[in-house]
Image (cartoon, rainbow, N blue to C red):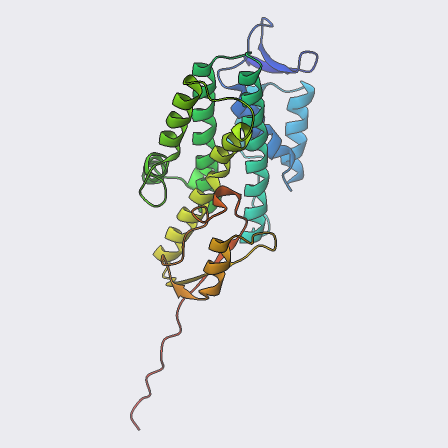
Length: 271
């Protein structure tokens, strides 16, 4: 079957073989391309650049990742590298959220379209965050997707989830909420909240592996009362320190968690 879609550098969009329309979700594909271009794997960058140049079709680029795989095993990735990649992904999603909000402000899209775009963006962000914690999207199970759905619906503390907050935001806009002031800040908070999902999944994984203590390491710029208090707790039983993303600075938090297994007292053998 011939490839249907290709990147057209002249119009900076995906077009089919007749030169019409874009594939179903160009925004999602564009975000994936941005992440791939920042990859440390030269082969990943090479084929992504080919896609951007229009020399290979979209399906071929996708096949490379799904089939033989442009991303090949290499040196083990550290948790710090994972966090850096997650931060870059969230920054990209933040730019997408801002662009979507600017379209709403300029009346280029209506509220219903903005709501749908934001729901998709929020969902994608939380899935990508969970995938980062699990070691890649291929590692996510149906149970993991169910857990992500729970977090979106109820949040890490079991209260309101991001979908509920978003619906309340939509109702406020319908009632005449002005687009100035904190409007843009509130918009970006929805994608930043994906950071909390990463830490929830990461904590659960460590607990499953037998880690039973945790501590919060404060990022130099994080000086809210919640982060300072969490760091002062030192090593504590896993699950007892307020999770990252639920503290005063919410999704802006760049603190990190460390885990360990408690040292067991040695039992001396009788002489």
